[in-house]
Length: 366
Image 1 (cartoon, helix red, strand yellow):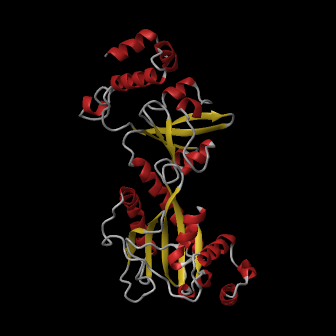
Image 2: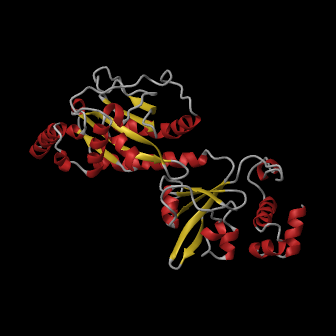
């Protein structure tokens, strides 16, 4: 307890010295918070001033941008579960978009916490308005962030604890944060684990919102499939990889951030056997796929593209409305995809499927 009191006193002294122009006083802060203090000062904020809040965008209930609405839908179930576990009077949990605007929230009656009243859907909470906060640091540096007490740039927020976890879009870029903010103290090590799981689950819902791709799940341990720790791949009809979540990027050694390079499943799983590659876009139970020497993952095809393209046959579900697609339907679909991936070279497609050219031709003609 005494160490915490001394630490807060040191931070108060550092803030006062920084306000007088002493940049060396920042040494008591972690580097991401140092950078945030510098950005806050560069925005014209003074440590002793009151926060400046912009007017709400909209009426606090309706979000104008479709990306905000989609992200809010993906995050809301996780916020509700986190709130059930860690919420309470004098606390709030929210999701902010990449611009720092609150787009989803869980809160108690906050009439006893005036510091938290401005946190509402439609409110922008950026460094230029309120200085250093956990969401601002997460958005700037793509890192989990913890800011408590006098680590805040504005002295007004000295009683506040906030912890946040970044959210990533389909290109692996930061698109928002989830955050818990309140008066008092919580166990950061406990919260960080739960908030990271919530962020992964929310990002996975973004992938499930795609309707025009194959969705594949992967993990080294099949017990982690159907959990927030599963890797997800979004694959186009032509076999090109469109997107991968952060777990899949790590498993496959893909770039952590940014749009993926042009890659096909054949290239991504070049270390797999021909039989394993043939099953990549076929429904079924998880199956083992070799990645390289001494490395493999369990992969499961979760879903085919929804709807019917102009050149596609009716979907298996439409052909078999009573339940799962039949074997013949699956074979026809696999044959069509292989022929398309081979640019019409039926001999090559047949070899990749492990069937004769005649059999492939019959499946395509059915």
